[in-house]
Image 1: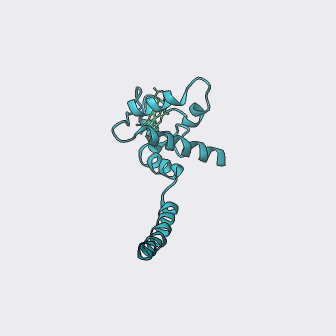
Image 2: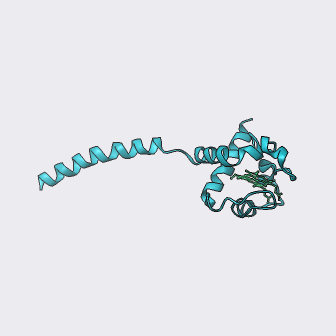
Image 3: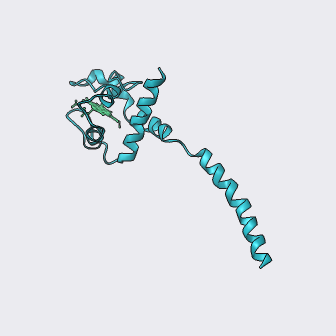
Length: 117
Ligand code: HEC
């Protein structure tokens, strides 16, 4: 009985700290959003999501100001997520690369950088 307790305590001592460490190393939602936004969206939508990226000049249609859309009364978050996953005119569809959670993380990143300015 005492042996089992010793093993359990030892296991806890080893496992608990590694869980805590793993947690602090895990990227936050905003950091995930930043990574995906910079890799997939920044070229068209620009540094802050205002629709002024380098590639925007080559398009017939101006990319949306994502920050403005997120704060608009006329667009729901669900509609914006749908546009990202399924595309919209010159906006490519991302449903094969991103899921709904990852799109929300991108939106959280855009809100955080715009609020910081
Ligand atoms: C090739 C350039 C391009 C890339 C890359 C791109 N977009 Fe767009 N995006 C557009 C254009 C152009 C529009 C305007 C389309 C419209 O209004 O129909 C748009 C519109 C949007 C809208 C508004 C949709 C609506 O219904 O009003 C959101 C939100 C958006 N993009 C998010 C993203 C996200 C997130 C990414 C990266 C995963 C991304 N875009 C990547 C060009 C791009």
